[in-house]
Length: 136
Image (cartoon, rainbow, N blue to C red):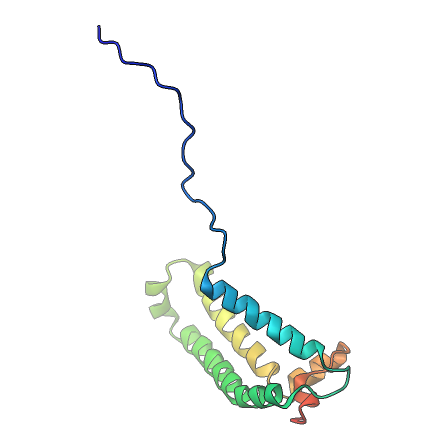
């Protein structure tokens, strides 16, 4: 009979050790969020935000409207080609989710980048950048 020396059981090393610092992308996002909150918090209620924020918002409006319209058209096109959709997404739930998600996202993007979104926000008592920046 072969006798092996007895070794004490050592605790297993964890598979993943958390790092002590955030990855650079997370640090960047956190810094960007902090900067945005600080810039918007510096504004008095009812006062226009800094010109740089209004300029960025104004430039992003067209792109947001364009992407919202494209998402609605894509959702409707996918709905029209339902037979082809069943080859890509086999379950009916996935098909419904793809169509509803695309159309819903498009409508939200369109609504919150126009006068309609402005009226929705004002209905809840929230001032929108659309009005504060003088776009409405």
